[in-house]
Every structure is written in C-alpha cells, then in structure tokens.
Image 1 (cartoon, rainbow, N blue to C red):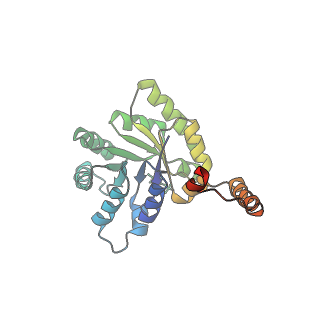
Image 2: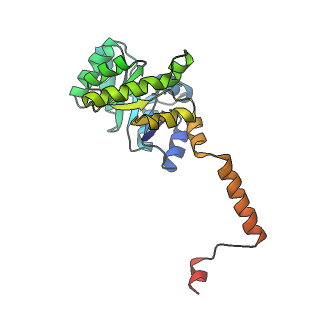
Image 3: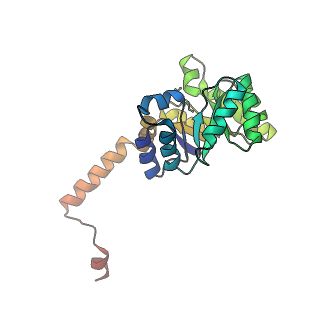
Length: 226
Ligand code: E4P
C-alpha cells in the first residue's frame, strides 16, 4: 500500500520525504489555508511539488465544470506531478471526464458512498478519496465503504486507485491495508505515531544501558581489519 501525507505543511512534507515514508501528498483548501500565510500560493504549491517525486493533489475551488476545468489546467501547469482534486458532484464528474481526456490526473474527493465511488471510476478518476473519519464522525462505519469499493472495483476491473482519506488514527491505516486499499493519506501526527512503539523505545534504551555498563563500543572498520 502506498502512503501519501495529508498536509500542506512543507516542513512535515520534507521530513516525511527524507525518512522515505511517502509516495505522494494530498492537500485541500483548508490545509493550505492553515499554512500559506502571505506567501505566493503558486510558489508555495511549487515548493510542495518539488519536495516529492510522487503525485501531489491540489484542489479546485470552482463549483461548475467549466471553472473546474480552467482551474485544473492552471494547477496542472505548475508541475508534472500535480493531480487535480475535484469534488464528487455532478459538475465534478463532468470535469473529471474532461480533465482525464486531456491526460490530466484527477483525484475525486469528498466521496462518502460506494455508489459515488463507482460513478467516479466510470468517469475515469485516477484516484477516489473516500473520507472514513468524517463517516465515523456521524456514526457510520467509514471502513465499510472501503471494503465495498474494493469489491466493486475488482468486480469490474476499474483501475481507479482507492485513496483512503480523512484518516484519524493508526487503526484506520492498518484496516486500509487489510482491506486492500491502494493508498492511505495520513496526517503528519498520525504518520509519526505509526513509526513509534513504546517497546521499541524501551528496547533501545536497555541495549544502550547494557552496552555502556559493559563498555562495549562498535569497532571501526580499521579496528575490525587489524
Ligand atoms: C484528503 O484528501 C482529505 O482532504 C483529508 O483527508 C480530509 O481529512 P479530514 O476529514 O480530517 O479533514
């Protein structure tokens, strides 16, 4: 399963890229609004697209298909790895077909049902983003639609990739992998929690303590040869 980072924070994106943890980035207008400040938006977006090799989702603000198409073309011109995020509305599906016909990648976002996901795949979406956390928030089992979408896409051989979004905790990540999702997009706070385990930390401390007590040091290559 691929991992995308779900943030527009360039420091977090660079940190995760340095650690070799991420295959791409997803942003949305709310995430950009948190970090962009007075910076030029196009420059800021370019910094993000330069920071990773994989796809970077940038979302349109227009709500009509013509507007989405125009904004999508502008965003796609920023860098080769830009994927256009459009909402799963009637207009969004029209824009998806047209952007795809122009060879531009599309991430259909704000998906909350398997039927919506089927329509996005038929429109040729590159990625479908079902929001599991927001479904959990309204007492629907978010992960259920991931299982349904996986089965439907496999039934018909759709190549639209399932990009699990609105991930809130490590179990969402594990369940995404168990259900065969293609990608999980993970906010930085959750991503770093995936790396950590208290037993790992305790184990490292104990090994270092024991080595220090016994005055063990790793021999250099020259010492090992002598
Ligand atoms: C990513 O593509 C989505 O915009 C994001 O995961 C939404 O997450 P949220 O529901 O925590 O805002």
